[in-house]
Length: 274
Image (tube, helix red, strand yellow):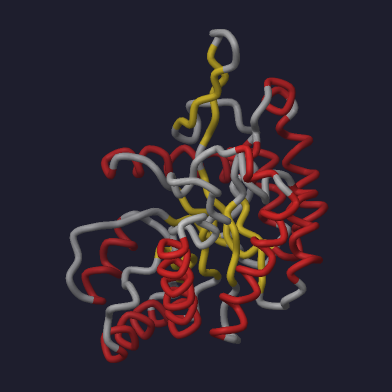
């Protein structure tokens, strides 16, 4: 299990590694995009290997199931480029969401839940993987509240339907906690996620969730330690896997230090290594 977070203020591999080390992290988001040249990529990969830093994720954030054909084709090409980058740099995964069946790339639409959309997601992921044929990385879909995979069961269904060895799991449990019942019993839910998906998990996100006392239901994403996610269970489950990154996200840069300190303190109390 390796903790990571975004870092900034670097213009070279040496400065990047220094920033990651200052944060006390052993994993990092990919510092490059598909427009970088091969020499630059090689320099960053070498620096990461020398410093024992795992490149956890290459983002491919886009909407490859958009009903707009131009948007869809552009997103498909981008996902393929980013997956190729992830394979070249040896990232644990290239991650996107499945997309959405509307103008907003991550929006909640009724058609997101249709059987045709599920089939489209299957075909789309196959097309992305088959175009690149990665050998060192995996394409993965971040779990979401209103598009599959929105539960461990739907992720398992996708794994079976897509049927590609280089399709993996990206686990963001907060995105799947969509009811007060799941919120209250999220420790058991986390254990269920790892029972079903553990062998396929390539990278995870670290954030927290807070139920507000306002009708009808208000569940807010917050920093680790400011909500109710059972991080004791989360960390214990992660520790049983093979060196999986746990990546902080969605915070102002100045708040990552405190969030990381909270997780390290908890891990230390549980005699776990981040």
